[in-house]
Image 1 (spheres, one colour):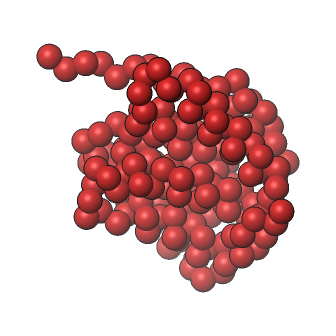
Image 2: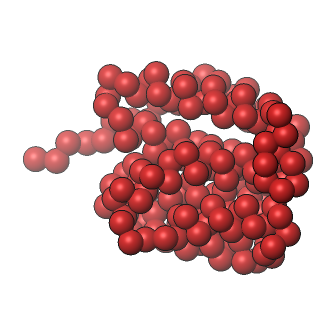
Length: 160
């Protein structure tokens, strides 16, 4: 018998993060999205040992920030990470790869950044014990908010 996955429950801080994100520039959001996704990359890689698509998507997002790759190339990496998410046999790993895909897609449309942050939280939620989910989600959302407040420079590095 297969157990149903628990319904994802986000922290109330999500709304404040979305409001703060609306005030940020494109490069700051791309940096933030890449940092969020990188925090759960080990979740994906623990389940998909040889699959580099999520890692490559995060690298593509960071490469776009630095002007090393085009938006079109970042989008290709995003599509690949989303394909990896569909192929993953673990819900947390799938969410982690979706976070990476949205991080790379932020190069195309800055609104993808909030989706990268949400999929990061989902990966954490599904990767921990049920009794830890609420605390871990709140901790991650708090980190996301604080990191976004600090911003990033055009090289993808934190400015504070």
